[in-house]
Length: 116
Image 1 (tube, rainbow, N blue to C red):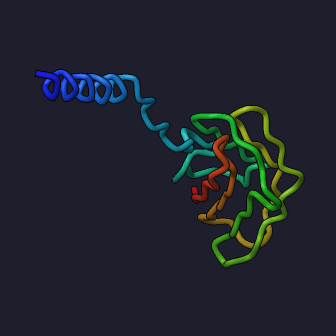
Image 2: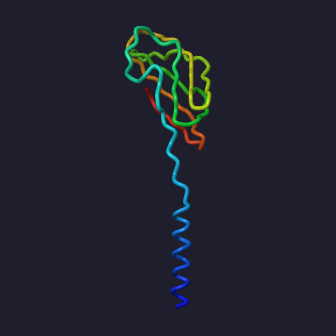
């Protein structure tokens, strides 16, 4: 009977730990961008804004934009306010599809990289 009581105590403790475990927090993901991915614009944007699911901070050179001919756009000082990252940009080279690459740091310290 003592062994059964001890086993029940151990099982109860394990069950309690499993019920109170904190679920894993999902990565901070990009939720939207301005201009939007795939947007067709009549002229090059003067700034870009990225909005994430949670607050982020910035590493050095968090944003770069590459034009259709591979030329790098001029990116001004990038700022962050909570979950929004904004940077003034100036197009270099011909008009056409461009790619914005970004790197931000989530609150948990993970680097988040992506492109739009």
